[in-house]
Length: 86
Image (cartoon, rainbow, N blue to C red; front, side, top):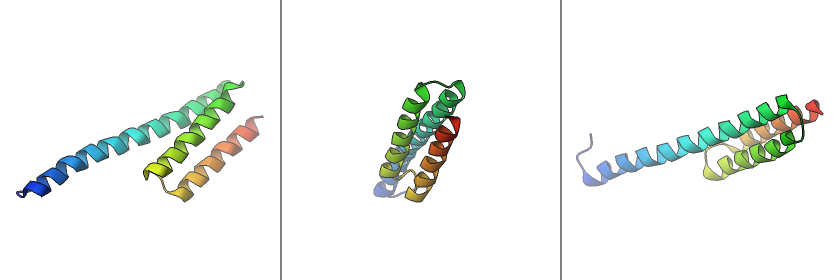
């Protein structure tokens, strides 16, 4: 445990930021799982779920949760899944 006041504050803030990042990662994974579920069910909701999943991937890049090349790969995989399902 740190003794210096500013170091104690940094420890507390790190916990806050880690919690925010974890929440954003969880939301990202949830949107991708919703897309997979909609794709398996079929229908028009797969297209809407695709748009939501791509949007959440882009938000993750903007927040610094995901690297831009990882996001590009993930979006490409989602697009291939959607196109192959049609």
